[in-house]
Image (cartoon, rainbow over all chains, first blue to last red; front, side, top):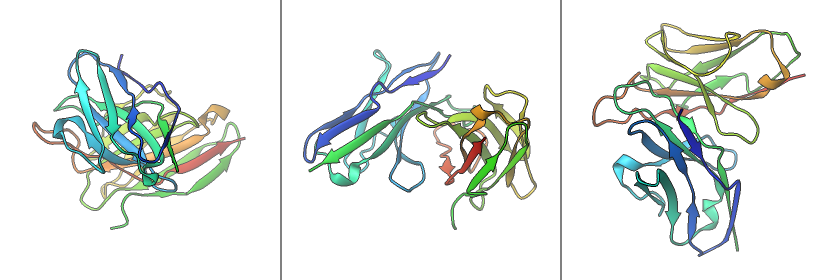
Length: 111
Length: 118
């Protein structure tokens, strides 16, 4: 069975501190991994995906297949990073666009 | 384009009733997916429709059904409502039904419909 685990419901950091949001997954095969973000009063939106290896808003995420992890990192947190973050996986190419989400981590950046 | 739109915004029903939720995808998108998000949880996949056909179904009872119309809009129907059906129902649209090699079929989410069952 496929599963995404985000162990922290809330992560509180000071502005300028490093951020790491943890995500572990289980899947038989090679899924695609994503991070979605939901800012206050806004829609759920894609932040980044592992296959593109990009940095968005200073965030990066590395897929570790050995540890089945896809942690989201940012070296210096900003106030505007405060939001709900969801890790998600999707079946590989050629299949339906089904997303399996974790329970989410609320990131709170304080001054 | 206003993005994915959903109606109604909020809905209150009583146990045993039936509900219909509506979704209009982004113009040009042919696939619609439905998700249920219970408070404190991540969204959970219910259905995907592409070109008016069901392409995927999550682990939900037969009380849940959906359909897609020729204009690619979609309805989610839930019969015999239970208290546990109270949730935010999200609709997401994407350009295609499946992912071709080397591409990502990004899903764009609507604002959701908040259903409360009393």
